[in-house]
Image (cartoon, rainbow, N blue to C red; front, side, top):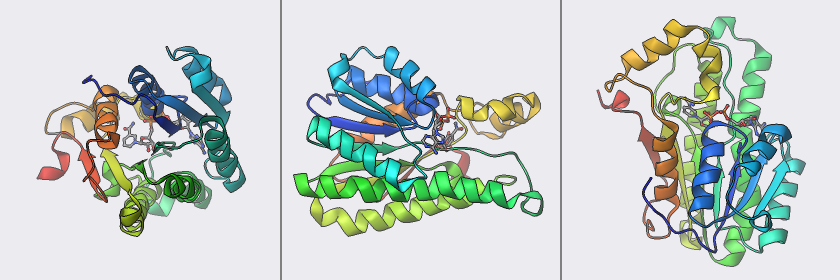
Length: 253
Ligand SMILES: NC(=O)c1ccc[n+]([C@@H]2O[C@H](COP(=O)([O-])OP(=O)(O)OC[C@H]3O[C@@H](n4cnc5c(N)ncnc54)[C@H](O)[C@@H]3O)[C@@H](O)[C@H]2O)c1
């Protein structure tokens, strides 16, 4: 990965117990950041912390369900109390759901997907923006999906939530542009993380996903985390309000 310098920066990452969040924690730690990490699963979150090179006084790790306002507020407040700043927030926590046409989708599946993938980002934004405004600026990156840019057959609730994340991102970017907070969304195509495990168990589906991509493969997690480092860097000061698609060219046609 290209080198970035996040020395002296406080970087918050949700969903840091697995996949992209886990790798992002390692990458930002290697770049010198102080880390505030959260996950709904404290066991996997602690496992992430155990792999970090950063010394313990530079890492705050808390269990937090991003769908619950009080937990999000407590996590962000603890971050600011500990590090006195919040420079970068990566709202990455997310869930998938069983593949189903809309008529076969359970209401509870839809509700939980919207609660975590969309309301979770809203609650994080609401908690993160005030400290960033108070300190004179910051950067927020919401992890959406290519399913937030195009339709995603059999993933209706997920696609609805991720489209919503992009709408929230663009709106927040316009609302906070003059307060020096840059807000973007990252939209990966299928990436090889544990999120795909349910599909992996149905091997042919995963192969079909790779075959449908112009590059005939899934994204590597490192490629997505590289874009996180780039998008949030101080010298990337004019990138704002964008849905940055990383999909091997899938949406180009
Ligand atoms: N892997 C892909 O193909 C892909 C593609 C596009 C977008 N994304 C998005 O990237 C993000 C990260 O996904 P990943 O692939 O690393 O998946 P992952 O399953 O490996 O990691 C997601 C993490 O989020 C945590 N999480 C789930 N619900 C939570 C909640 N309510 N509160 C806090 N933490 C919670 C999980 O415990 C897990 O540690 C998600 O937003 C996902 O939608 C993934």
